[in-house]
Image (cartoon, rainbow, N blue to C red; front, side, top):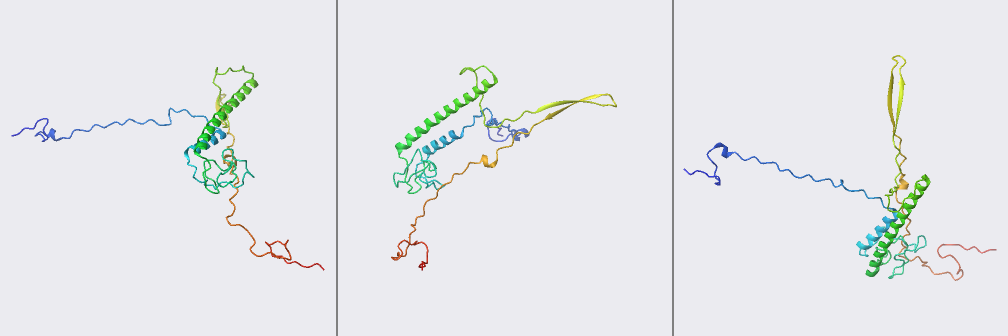
Length: 251
């Protein structure tokens, strides 16, 4: 009779050899949440967000995409002239600030920026962002110094202390705790009760203030030219050809 060895595949004669080995549970390492360990960055101003949006649009777009909102045809009559692409070099349309430079011309769909102009404009946006950040930091230092001077504190030397970061969010008032002493006339015992007064924070910004105000865009002119189809009257060359008028002679 052939006996099974430790390395043979055949099952042994003992009942314990037919039992399957218990599988050990595998412990998978738990992933740490992404939110922990990250410092919250200070909120950026509206001017910096606008410049970053323009810089990102110039770098990512090809220049052939049309504005999904249709652009503006006011020709700088209602809005300021665009400082980045003031005119379309293909059709001569005057462009206002509503027409973004990384979109195509709203009239002829021509590319507004060449490759050289696109690269130089990207560098210009980076410089404007750096200047705006430095300007806002100087303004923050000035406001903090004015607050310290108003409180009578000593002036802070540059780099000696960390200045607080100013936030546009309204400050929430702190809760106040009050203790009340009550005396029972029958039992002649007193009790001390604590009450916490939680003040209500100021109302949030209204819907009109939170939403971005949509600018007025001048629509494109009609493709058809409006003209008078009938021939002018020789007896009344000054008459209005757009209206049917009946001239009554004066007696």
